[in-house]
Image (cartoon, rainbow, N blue to C red):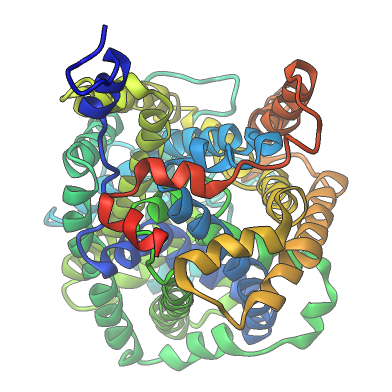
Length: 592
């Protein structure tokens, strides 16, 4: 049966159900949303600690080289891929059929992120709410969770016992030392261990759910849903607040910290170069890992953000602005953190080595203690944890948007035929991730969380995926052929020779080498003094493999089932896919 115009019923359905791809309302929406994805908790505690641990100012050398030689080329690759296809990560990597498994690997990375990242925000939210109590709960030993080993922070400093209290494990510690004498534990550490985590003795003792953390985790997911359920037109407006206010708050904390007595001690240790550390390969590995992690690469995020750009958006300019902004944010966070910790070291007559702790020890123990030295400690603690909360929330918004876009683009029915399918689908995903995240808010939840945090969203799988992206575009699709697509979008660029060289040679070589190093230099995962048992180490590697394995599996499946030759499976012409999602105006521009 045909219509009066001669179109078949199938053609009519295609015309009436066609839905145009959403685009950013303003050019800087992409920059703010991308900043929301990448400027997060890693900037405010992970970067400063790595900078201190790996040679102070000397760490900036491998960090900046990693930004220029890895982050910028990979950002250009991912953003341009999403912008040229103007669909999600699945359709984008379908342009290189042999490496379409990268989209599945990126989806698994997003899954791990959406399970573990909101748990950190639940911890932050608990601290933020606690800031409004008359007495900060991490200052005293008069709370129900405190033990007989507790010594309040102020009491410890008065008795000059602080060195014994701060130089301890941040998560798990032994009850007695070698002589059998009882250890003492700071009130801040007891609040973190027992008041927040209710920590058990190991992974095999999961224990019961922590009701308050369950509530805070639910609040985080509700906020995330309200910010993303209407798509990028709405979430971009929310990011205007969540991406800019934290920077203002960090500047306030930095200025306040710089005025404290002893702040120069912390800044000196933060920036003091120790060039001998550069001989250690772990310094270079740490810098490269921080760059891939903090810039949100190898997941679905940057491709999804780029897919909402207009076809002729100058993404190279945006990538450079975004790269500089993210690096500046990390550097500024270092000043904010270490100026305050330097003041703490000065007042307590400690060295910076005894004050600075990694990970949760810095965010949830040392820094809250340092802020208690200031007048109005509730105010400054509230500002600090509000900053952390906003930094984490906008990252979570983009994680969920990317995950939703991945499946919405995968299903034509979801995307085109159901008006409210996005809201329902997003609600189902949020509930699913919330239920999965409950495993991380039990008494043994910290051990589950560290598996996702160490092996699910970082480690060797991240570099393996990055290497596959470089190979897919640089060799299989062809760097020169791909740059022709870029020329259609933004015109010729002087960066072409350098970027294509990195795509083909430097990028894949370095990423594969780092991936091999991670496996070869593997050490058992630990949380404080607790060493994960052998059976759990197998689970850790399975979590990493759950992302990376999709790339070779899909390539093998495609070769085994396709009747096409390998040369025919190299690429699909992007302009054929692009025309499906372009508006009529953009189609005319491309014809010109």
